[in-house]
Image 1 (cartoon, helix red, strand yellow):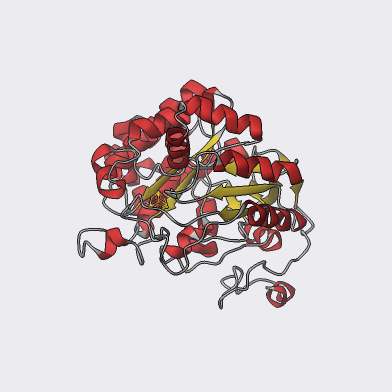
Image 2 (cartoon, rainbow, N blue to C red; image 1 turned 90 degrees about the vertical axis):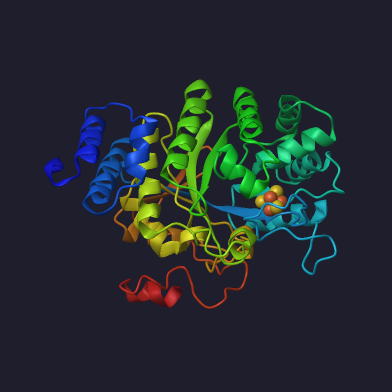
Amino acid sequence: MNLDALSRPVADILARVQEGRETTQAEATVLYGAKGADLKAICEVADGLRQKVNGDRVGFVVNRNINFTNICYMGCTFCGFAKRREDEGAEWLSLETIVERAREAQVRGATEVCIQGGIHPKMPGTYYRDIVLAIKAELPDMDIHAFSPFEIWYGAAKLKMSYADFIQDLKECGLGSIPGTAAEILDTEVRKQLTKDKLSTEKWVEIIRAAHQLGVPTTATIMYGHIDGPQHWAAHMALLRDIQKDHQGFTELVPLSFVHSDSPLFLDNPGKVRPGPTVDEVDAMHAVSRIFLHGQIDNIQTSWTKLGPERAQGMLAKGVNDFGGTLMNESISRAAGSEHGQEVTAFEMVQIIRAAGRVPVQRNTRYEVIEEFANHDPARQAPLVARDVHTPLDFMADLPEFLQRSA
Ligand code: SF4
């Protein structure tokens, strides 16, 4: 790589990265704001680190999202998902329905159910453990990846338990891992505007650290592209990296781009809130995060629900080594206005990853390999939920004809 063609600060930082030095928060702020040739070089460096750490394999997990209630009164300003109890479309699934959805998922090959819901004012704190126990009683092998730190905070408060005791109880019931959602941007001023700081940065960190100390892994997320900027992203990543150095409990980072269309934050503040990240910002988020977290968090995941399969595929050249879950149902991004589908089947995952020149690998929640699809395909399945118009493979116009027929 010719560093002479780059701006001096970026060239110097990338030279230090190539010497194997850890990137500082101040350096990450510079890199997150890069454009043009600088950004292209950053993406190349990130891709090189990805190759070194993960090789050509790109993982995905066959899973199902189960959003067991969308009733929530927390009033996060970015959220298009929450409803009041009397609203049309408000729902709170029974344990029987949740188990039935998990069973359907297993029949379709899922190894994981990802379960999150709103903060329902009438829900007992014991409902979280009841969900885990009910699924495990029927499906003992299913990985349960469930309950955001917001829900842990709420359940623990309702039962007057410490976070550690609440998580330990869930673990004993069969909880395997926790989504590191509700992180948004771990900066007090930004959080005040996004979540009214109901779940503060300190509480989020305390809950995540408690989980990691108990041996319950979590993902790490960032929601970006609204009222935030490179300095917030760098501070957020520095905090995640510090936590990881202490516990090694994060399985992956998942950047989540802000979906603005039905979000009150955007609709109620005309001209003051960005409509999601720019193309450059999406590239920078994935690539710089790979560089900054190198040596600490090995897996950088792209979110096809936020970006769509085509742009998500593009992230595989920018430091990303994981395509996330097949999901089967996705309601949170869609409620906020995302146009992307509810499911990318395992067959489609494999075509998308392979078309990017990588080797698709089905993994479980813990990143253990279940099956590599170098030269064969998973069975084709009709999507669980009827699709609107497009299929995840529509963008791949140059696919062989047989694939286009199947899509
Ligand atoms: S983001 Fe979660 S906690 Fe906040 S309003 Fe929406 S459902 Fe409720």
